[in-house]
Amino acid sequence: MNNYEHSVYLDVQKCIGCTTCLRHCPTQAIRIKDGHAVINERRCIDCGECIKICPKKAKKAVCNKLQDMDGFKWKIALPAPTLYGQFENMDDVDYILDGLLKIGFDDVFEVSTAAELVSAYTRIYLKRKDIKKPVISSACPVVLRLICLRFPSLTDNIIPMLPPMEIAAMMARDKAKAEHPELSDEDIGVCFISPCPAKASYVKNGFGSYKSRVDKVISISDIYFQLINAMEHTDNIKSLSKSGMIGIGWASSGGEATALFNDAYLAADGIDNVNRVLDQIENDNIPPLEYIELNACTGGCVGGVLTMQNPFIAKAKLQTLRRYLPVSQNFIPKEQEGEVPADYFFSEMPTYYPISRLSASMSESMRMMSEIQTLRKELPGIDCGACGAPTCQAFAEDVVKGNANLSDCTIMYRSQLLEYLSSKDDTSDGK
Ligand code: SF4
Ligand code: SF4
Image (cartoon, rainbow, N blue to C red; front, side, top):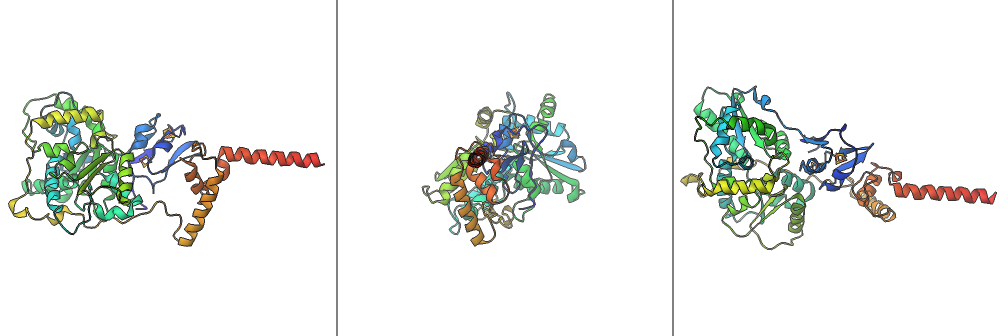
C-alpha cells in the first residue's frame, strides 16, 4: 500500500493555503506547508471531500480521457447506474446507452446488470454459517480503504465478493470474446464511466492481490456534454438496457441493502457517518445486524464528486426511471442457486495497513505517545489550523515524529518570544 497510486491531486498554483480542506479531510491526510496544502499519500483514501470543499478548485481528480480508449480494437463502456440520474426528462435508459455507442464505444454493458447478480449472490452468501456478521459491503472503495487503514478488526467483516463494476467487466469481456472470437484479450478495452475518483484509484491499484479487469476510468462529468449532444440524435435507438429496479437502485444509498430482502440491515452515507458506524461496529455498539451498506458520498454514488447533478435530484430522477421497470432483469442460473461462483470472490483480502502507528517498535511507540500527550497539554487546544495541522493533537504528533517544529504554532511561538524578551529585560535590569 506504500506505492498506492492516487486519483486526487493538488494544483499547487491554485492553492492559497486557506486550510478549508485541512479541516474536512476525514483521515487528517492534509497539512499546510510553505503556504499550500500537501496530501499525505499514506493517509489519503481518495474520498474527494477536499475536491468538493476547496473554494479555489485546487484539488482535482485524475481520470482517463475518452481518447485513452483509442488503442483498443473493441471498446466497451461500463456505465455506473448513477449516470442514468444525470439527465433531464429521461424516461428510457436506452437513450443514454445508445449515446455511449454514438460517442465511440463498440458495446455497452450496464454495471446495474451485474449489480442485480451481486445482490442475488449476496442473498445466498448471507445464509452461510461460517461468516462474520455484520457483513460489510465491498462496493465503495473509499470504505474499503478506510477499513484497511483505521479499522483492523473489521477487515474480516467485508464481504469478499467483487463489486458490480468488476463483475460487469468480467461479463462484458466474456460477451465480447463469445461474439467476436477474432478479438484477443489485448484488443478489448473496458472503460468504467465513474461518479468518483476512488473507483479510478481502485482500478489502478486493485484490491489486495486482485487486479482490476477494468482498463480505463472516465468521469461522468468528462463525457457529460459529449453524451448529451449524441443523445439528441434519437434515430435508430437500439433496445440495450437489461436492468431492473434493483440494479439501478444501487446508485443511491440503501439501494444495495434493500435488494437483499432482509430487514436486518443498516445503510449509512457520508464519510462522517461511515466513520461513526465503523467505530460503533468496532466497539460492538450496534444492534444485531446481517448487513451494513456504507457509501462515503452523501446519498450514495449519486453524491460522487465527478457527477453533474445534485445528488438528491439525481436520486429523484432515478426513482422516476425505476418506477417503470421490473424488479430485476437478471437471475442466477438454476444450477447455481445454492452457491456463489468462485470467480465472484476476491482471491485475497487486503491486510491492515495502520496509519496511526508511531513506530515499528512498541517501546518507542509508547515513548512517543507519552511525549505527544505532554506536548498536547502545553498547546492552546483551540485547533486553529494556523500551524498547518488540522488539530493541536495532530500537530503534537507531527512535532514528535519530526515532521513539524514547535515554532510553527504561532501562539507557542509568541509566548516563547515574550518569555525570551522578558528574560532579556530582566538581565538588562540587573546590570
Ligand atoms: S481548500 Fe485546501 S487546496 Fe483549496 S485553496 Fe484551501 S488549502 Fe488550498
Ligand atoms: S481525497 Fe479525502 S482523504 Fe484524500 S486528502 Fe482529500 S479529503 Fe483527505
